[in-house]
Length: 259
Image 1 (spheres, rainbow, N blue to C red):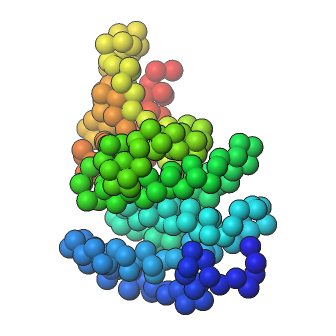
Image 2: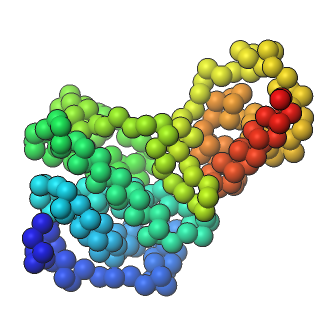
């Protein structure tokens, strides 16, 4: 990446706006009221954050700054869509790991196995379309809907998305609040660990009686009903980080009883 290059994806990076924390809060308030223009302002106001992150990869990657910047913007959009303001964490603190993750996955995709530029372009168009349609439809769009939106055959979209997909460890951290780390495995629901399959062989019922009402409910939802931490958090109206913390405490209590 040339150090004096200021135009990336047609954007003059020297003129990118920089939002204050007060301005971010004002934009969040407008977004809460359904102001779509506030979302665009927020994204544009955080492009400097994307730029600062991709500069970390300048010496590690031969790809153009334009490509990395586009990938970083995907991470920024994902961070905005998943940001939980109730955690009292700065947006930049949450967004940087998401942007870095997107850049690292992109670099892995373009190292040992080269994916053609045309496939990557289709994949990124599909990702952008999916993000847009999810907000518009208030649900995840089908491949057919994405295909219609970007006017590309669904078979080509599936092939392109498969081409850039990267295997991830179930123990890859996805977010951290203080000393509580949330891992990918925490987002995976388990539909096979039903109560009737294994509770008869252990003293789990007695161990669960040692838990308070909220911990008992979390263990029941997580391991007997196979729900993810995100689903549990939504059902009992607390943050995912709190679910993770309470789940760990409950399992520790049960483990002591079962020894």
